[in-house]
Length: 477
Image (cartoon, rainbow, N blue to C red):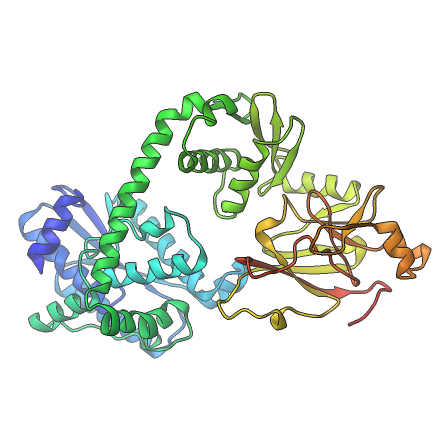
């Protein structure tokens, strides 16, 4: 096994003489194996090792036992062990994250802190091929692009993963053969987390009923996908100056002349890189926003789209300009309130005090066994086809020219006529909240929704909007 790992480390130039490696050691089989791999390397390379252990404050006595085991193991081999105690459940609530996500972030922060304080050169993580296969399945199910299908990288900046050439079985066999003990995290046996369900219910079926080498083959495929992605990124970098102009005011101009001559795959990567650069962030940018910019390139000059992070895309004579419309969230909210229009946080919770509304938005993946009977039939909970919504979603009151799409053929009815037909009192019409996208009304809150963005068999992602607090005099469920 060591020969296999050493070749893998050499292939990706993970560790060299003089490195100081900060290693995440939980006490589980994977991290214990990582520690012994590093100890073996230390015999032939001039490297220093510092272990980092994070006690998440979740598993009580079991977590304390893991901590004691890890500290004792490191001390026995002359390795410094830095221990962090965190209350991950409390942190998750404060950050409005899942316990899983908060745990990952806390661990990363601990590694980076130790890396700085110890003047490390590499951060070693114990991910292996089974972890990578689970990541691939999760990304596939959630609709990831080509980059996401490349899985976990062996090297990502100063982070290295020397065990990414091994399966979980190979790791445990190595430890048992050499008489090395490890701790068992009982939460890994539960199916409360998505990754655990894939680990216990999906991977075994693939290995036992499809192909015993399924995990290895998935890792080989991910390596090929990563190579393809890296090649496409290289091509995008080569054409960047021909297609993009970076303005002094931090605006990004995508030139149609250069952009139009590129293959669609390069166009998508190019637009995404421009969006990230204009936004200064990446997390909430999806293929929907990339395609919104690409669609705008085919529109007439003057058309625009509102995008996450206060970025506005405007079609001009040269192509599409991406620019932040407000530097501070407070300024943006003030402008929205002055115009009587409020942008919904998607996903997230939007409180509109002026209208006494609290609106929860979340994105759902449509299941394979989807049935129209699953669509909520409530006045204050609605489902929409998220991928065909144009730009930002907003809440506002009526404006001249407002209309509703009333059937699948796209037939329209003026909002004024709808109010009259529904016998909504005249004094209520000007204050009735409307959920809209950039082009039209999607929902007359408390009444009917438009037929324009209804969930259908072709829907991939569902946007659920739920009014959790409503004090206005409108229709009840």
